[in-house]
Image 1 (cartoon, rainbow, N blue to C red):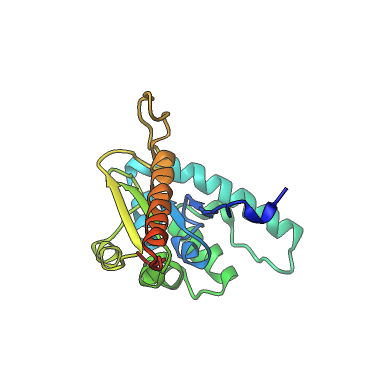
Image 2: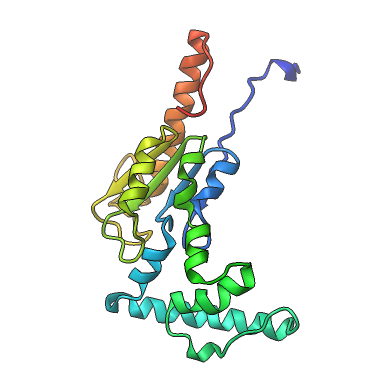
Length: 210
């Protein structure tokens, strides 16, 4: 068996990012990527989460954060000095009193400014698909971030009118199942693979940034 004659398989490392702690900046570190409902702008998104319509989700999220923070402080009391966690009533307050001081930031404002992925969008050099629903109740993508996305040819911006927060579903049909966002990921990678094959056939190099 001549294993040397076998075609070399192609691998497309894709990373799926959800939520506020997984920033799209990591997409640029290795392989092709995709960010779904990613929190690019931390400050306006934290404020949107505190709107009355989103308070139920924020309270649930805070309960989980307070529980984890309390458990960590109980295991490592010398490392984590927690404020009275029961007094925290918003994500911004949690970030100001817990996240920032324990992660080396001055306060929530400093954390949001330095940790937001939006400031690094121009540095992404691998093909990356960004999926966002315009009716997402608490993930806010600012106009400045949208301009940065449009200015970077490595980024593909796919915005839908509906979808909420990570709710990209569709009626299953003969070609695709109900998972609309996952199908867009496969389509995105397939288009990149086709472009690579065409470039190789034409005897030219394939630009990763395209």
